[in-house]
Amino acid sequence: MKKNILTTLLAAVLYFLCVGIGVFLGHLVDQTGNMFYAPAFSALVGGSVYMLLLTKVPRFGAITTLGLFMAIFFLASKHGAGAFLPGLACGLTADAIARLGNYKDRIKNTLSFLVFAFSTSGPIFLMWIRPKAYMATLLARGKSQEYIDRIMVAPELDKILLFVSSILLGALMGALIGQAISKKLTHKI
Image (tube, rainbow, N blue to C red; front, side):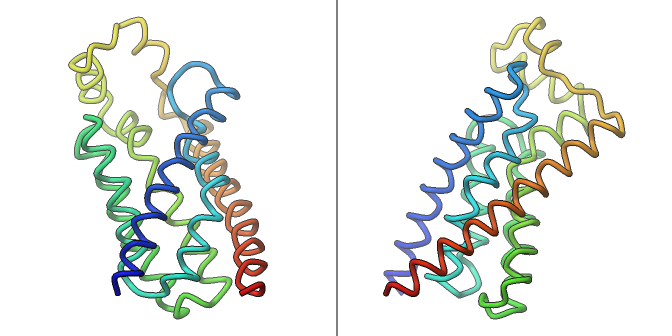
């Protein structure tokens, strides 16, 4: 039990680092500063951590904890409750999907990660759902109006489809890479 908790906490820290790498990669692609591509790159890089966690802690709660960790980060970084909810909801849903396959079914684990990948999308969704509140939050955090004007992305259908499809593509690639790495590591043990 204690080992499972420590493994889950380690995975949360590692996934958080993957999100940092995802933000960096997203910034290389799009330098507006709006983090539009960060969830996709985070999923691409974080798939290995996720799949290893499913292998090491095949119990309900580990993925939920990972999602809760992301949710708390967004709340603590003053993104607001709207950015908090996807982390929690995606974590719980992803955990439930993986549980349907007893954390061993490759398809269910992949689907689980496709859902979990949206746990870091809260700030963009909040930007689209409540743009005035999002702008007010940024102003309260000391951001300039010029910065806000630069990072805002209009909720147009093509942008929404690009956002969702980029996350799904990043998550699918991340899941496949993660499953390959997980399989290789578990066969060595």
